[in-house]
Length: 291
Image (cartoon, rainbow, N blue to C red; front, side, top):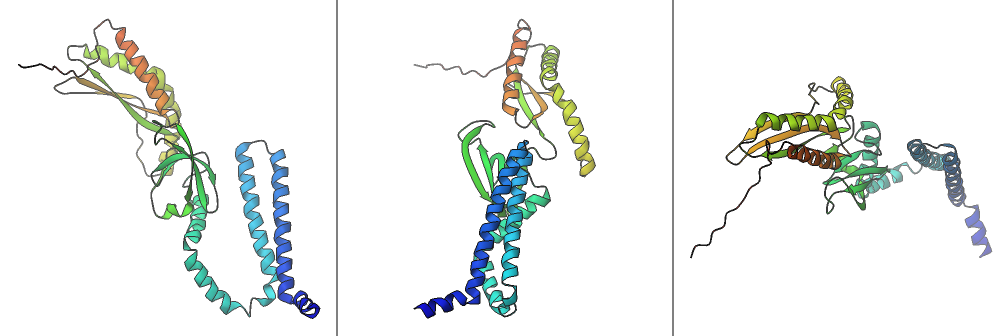
């Protein structure tokens, strides 16, 4: 029994496995200590998050290099075995490998970054973490209307970047175009209606246009895209029921719902102050009982 134990302890493979385990533990401890130290030094949340991710990734690399150095003398004899095992592992872990490749694409391909609002695989939310295998979102919408959080945290495999479109609401251009519609009754003063709506819209969202112009000019220089207008625009159409004024405007991607509420409220208040010269239209149904 003792001879067997002695031979097992003196086995070079066992010694290298033990050394590899010790190296991994040491690297893990150093990573944790470094993260805690930087957490106390770095105050900016974004910089702290990025430094923590970089240290974790560096720890993985150092651990792999350490294990490789320990087993380097046996790599030549194990080349064929590693090749066969590697092929099997690659087939079994193809989704994991694709997720790691997706992480590299996200990190260097400018798909999105932490803090962006995105739509991935039909799920809309803010990116709160980008891991090596998964991207984590704080979901918006679903049973909650508008662009508000619903409280669910969703984790999506990074391999999705090779399979589905990635919609970024806030990447190079952190604004969205939005529209609201105001139906106006026939007989109303059309010129006054347009002027009232335009004045209200410019008062509340005109400031966004100045910020959006600067972002859009950067976008035009980066991509092959036309120099679009970001000023608020009011257009009118007419049908058999009423005149429809459509307001198109640029808004901060996180303030779409609150801005829409402000515009509807102030426009209706302004229409009420026209003393009946402008009236909002509505559909009505006349029900008659026939005996």
